Structure formats: C-alpha cells, structure tokens
Picture 1 (cartoon, one colour):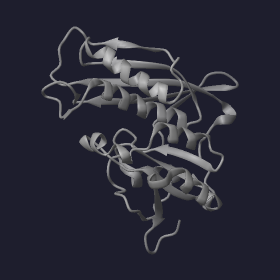
Picture 2: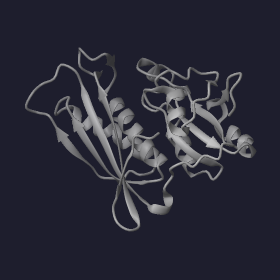
Picture 3: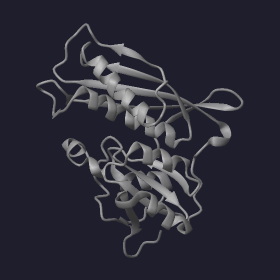
Picture 4: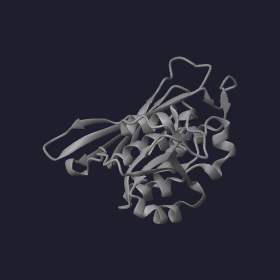
Length: 239
C-alpha cells in the first residue's frame, strides 16, 4: 500500500501528498553512507515523486526540509531538479527550509511532494484475483544503490508503466521489501517466490511492483528486458 495521503480538495479533485527522507547519508564525516548531496537530493525526491505518480496524480509543488547545512541546499536542489528533468517536469516549483541555527553531526533531508488528481483518476486497486504480478528492478539499499545502478528501474521506464493501459496498478517498493508491500497491497497472504530477495529493503524505490493481466505478459516483458522479475507463488499457494 502506498504511503500517500489523499485529501479531498473540491467536488472534482483530491490532493495527493507523498514524502521521503534521508538520514546519515551524504558528505559529513559521520554519515553512515558517503555520497554527494546531489545524489541524496535526487534519490529522496525520486521516491516521493514515484509514489505521487503511482497514485495517478499530477505533482504541483515540492517542499524540501534540509537539516544538513546552508551549503547543502543548492546541491539538494540540483539533485531534485535532475529528477524533474528526467520526468519532463522541470518547471515545478521547489520551496522549503534549512536548519541553520544548529549544526548536526550527520546529514538529513526530507522532501514532500504535493499533487492533485481528479476523482475519476483514483488508482485504488480493486483486485479480481486473476491478476499477475512482477517486480521491475531489484531491491537495493545503501551503497548497493550506487554500485548496481544497472539494476535500478529508470525513472523514464517507471513513468511509462504509470501510463501503460496494460498495467493495472503500480507500487514503488520501500524499506519493508517486496513481500510485505505485496501483502499490504493485495490483502492476501500467499507465500511468494522470485529470483530476487523479497524480504530485502527496496531503498530509494529501486524497484516497483506491477499488476497486469496475463494476456499482457509479453508486452510487459518486452518493455522491461532484464529489469523484469516474475513474482510467483510457492508450492501449495495460488496466485
């Protein structure tokens, strides 16, 4: 299930609010993962934007909460703008605040995306029980995200899935992993198997779950190539 908050706006539209954060990742000596603040800004907005788009919403505004330093702000913003360029939404406004009164020992960033959708674009899934599921990309976390970029679902491919008629629903995977996300999403408790670790954290949404009709399997596999991973039942279960 998505972490999005849906708020009625008027008779025709809803607000869709999504968020992600990053802690102890960045350029400070005591950070647990060492990388550039630009990459942190990119990765953090990537998650919040993916969750917003997966809900069928159009992002309107981005809010950044910077707990690292005044100097880090521009790098975070540059990384966020790289996400917007990849999604062809580089005109979106970015606002926010920096904690400049007190210095922290480790880096910290929070990003919120505020979007809107019309009521009829509601993507809350109604399952028929006949759907097939797949994981696109691989669950990666920490330094793996930097070292195995060729396994991370590209934003352009993710956006394509959000727009494909052959795909019934899309869910970015977070820190609880594929299996937990699938069970929360479908309200089912099947035992699952795949060629990837279904319990592992998906970090900054390095992979997604998709639901589709079996008749569209070939189209989806062709679109995804090596990013495609079957999600199938273990023995004694049905999907």
